[in-house]
Each structure stands twice: as C-alpha cells, then as structure tokens.
Amino acid sequence: ADQEKLSFKNSPENRGKWCDVGLWKYSRHPNYFGEIFLWWGIFLGSTPVLKGAEWLVILGPAFLTFLLLFVSGIPLLEDSSDKKYGNVANYRQYKKVTSPLVPLPPAIYEHLPAWFKRIFLFEFPFYSRNLVQESYT
Image 1 (cartoon, rainbow, N blue to C red):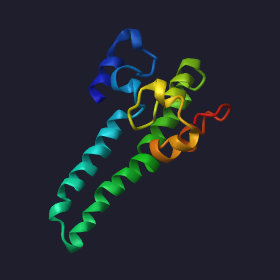
Image 2: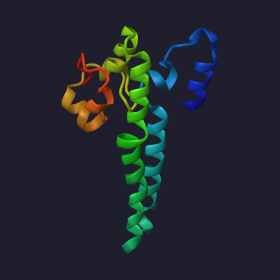
Image 3: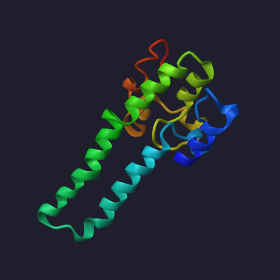
Image 4: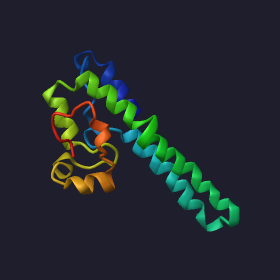
C-alpha cells in the first residue's frame, strides 16, 4: 500500500491529488489495516501456547490498534487530508464511499447503514470533524 501511494504521489500528473487507486480505492488507510491485521494474526496464532501471564501479550496488538484508530494514526491523517482536500467535491465523495480501514468495494460501503459503519468498520465521526457540513457515515 505504501509503495502504491509513493508511486502515485511521484507521478507528475497526480500532483495535488489524493491517492484513490489500487488498495486506496477500497480503504482510506489500507496500510494501517495490514498492520493491525498482522499483529492480531500473530497474537491469535500464538494463543495455543500461551499460559498464565503470557496472555498479557494481547496488550501489544490492543495498544497498537488503539493508537492507530484513536491517537496517532488515522485521526491525524484524516485531519490532514480534510484540511488539504476538504473543499474538493471528488475528495468528499471518495471519503463518503471509501471505508476508513477495512477494505471494501465502494459500491458496498456506500450503502451500509451508519451504525454498521461505526461499529464494525470504524467510521468514527471525529474522523470527519473538519467536514461538518455533511454527514460522512
């Protein structure tokens, strides 16, 4: 995902645009999805051998998930993108139809109910606090 975005940004015809191709068409933060998925997968794979206090290793993926969803990951990047592109109609549409984390086809994501997006797909209102004029869930 990072390589896709780097290639997109390095292309002169994409100057001043946000990346919405490849994995970025299906998730606004596919790299974070991969990171979270990887660490939870490692934890789940290790569960057969965990005993007693070893179960505290769950704190690693839990803390990483917390940071990326609520502190230093998605919130900062969403704020930055909203400030940079928030007045561009195509960006606003991209944000409406693209999952913030879990990769989904835009045609499916767009039609899911807001409660489902918030609970299962992490579309939290504070991800769009700079775009208060419209609903993004």
